[in-house]
Length: 243
Image 1 (cartoon, rainbow, N blue to C red):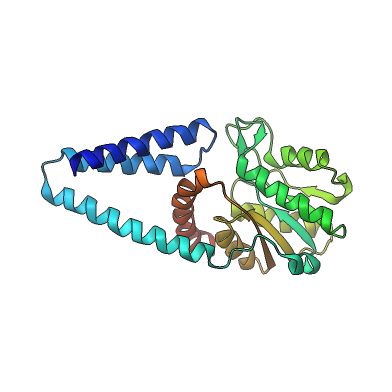
Image 2 (cartoon, rainbow, N blue to C red; image 1 turned 120 degrees about the vertical axis):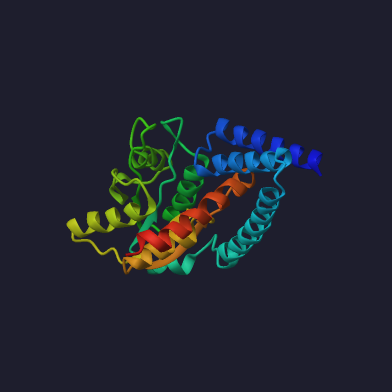
């Protein structure tokens, strides 16, 4: 048992380091490191009460994360042609930049999904969201705009905001920007990663938007840390953001 836990902890730590090296720098990899440290602590502690509490915590957490993943993927849509016909705008949510300058893998997948639909449905315009993080050289939405232009989307179809720092602000600043331009904004084809869509959809509906979801598929390699991070963010949104 001790050897198994040591091996598992080591694998979790190495996996976390690998994720950080390839540019996945959300809270997920750090959660894995924390959990690995807890497992190692359970191996070496002589306190049976603490040891059992850690084991119970992990069992409950695994049950919770499996339930969350089930809820998360129950209504995922990777294609939504009917929603595209009814939407006023394609809204693409940011996911942070890689190395401060480049689209992250998740950001690129979201952008590619939006570009695919913009080419299929030329009546649609796109709104890009994402400000500048502390480790980023430019706002994410500016980099996204360059990517859309490189992929043949006319500049007159592209709108953006460059101040948001989270999903709630992504949606709020989208609404504020289009209100200022006196443009219709209530029906949106919302583009984000599959793991992020339930929370993003709840926030958008909180602002009285009609949401037609269009998901990009998460890379298998980043599924675990993204789910771990998102479940905590989901709880935080329900408690703090929807007021």
